Length: 70
Image (tube, rainbow, N blue to C red):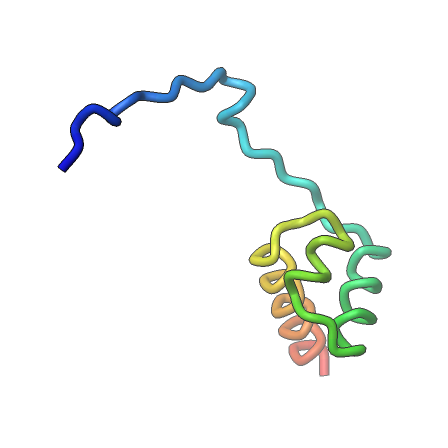
């Protein structure tokens, strides 16, 4: 076991902040269109400049809201 590689990385307050961008109606439409065309979440994420997990969560939320309105 190598104990010499226990360096601590210090981050500034700016680096450690996570930013959240609210989803726009246009992004929602694009997400639905791309997913309905069979595109994978990771590729949609690149297209929308978001993380794959945020894209998948948003997609599921949209579907849930659509089913709830019926």
